[in-house]
Image 1 (cartoon, helix red, strand yellow):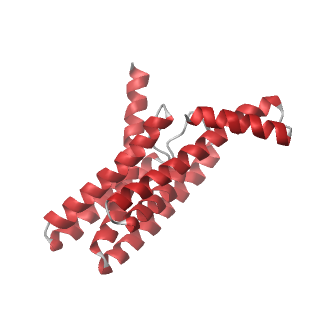
Image 2 (spheres, rainbow, N blue to C red):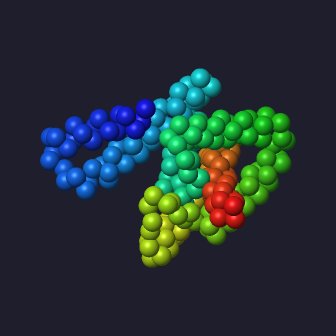
Image 3 (cartoon, helix red, strand yellow):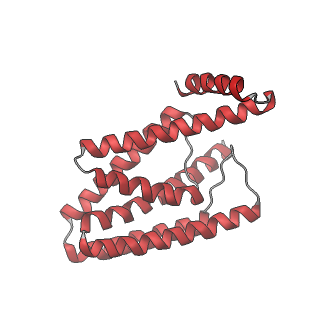
Length: 198
């Protein structure tokens, strides 16, 4: 579906903008990524609407996208799988957050979140950025991305614990979302090792 739409849009753009033949694939890929990203946003907003908490959807998108742009992580083989994985990541984060905030004693939650936050930070700091086979980057650019990922992580982490003081659910969810990015990094690393060994 996304391929068909992007092919049509690329043909249309080529007609009106006179794009060179050797640049068609670049434009097509850019359109595919844009459509898939917009679909991901719509799916998260829709899921958060169904869960009766749009703010959680907005928090997830802001935290996940802000960190993921510099850290990298799991890349699905198809756009359908990408959209499904992104939505399931949101729903899993939502479920984990509900379990933490509803089932654990308040004095234990802060300790648990601090441990999750520290472990997630270590993963992001050590493994970022996970390189994408579609977009190879130089070592210099990779170092810059790692520094940016660390800075973004630390800023969001500080904001999370500040928000937590006034709203446990939202502050906790920000930390769980940071952890979700870390998990996606680990999944991509393990996936590549398995494929490499296979």
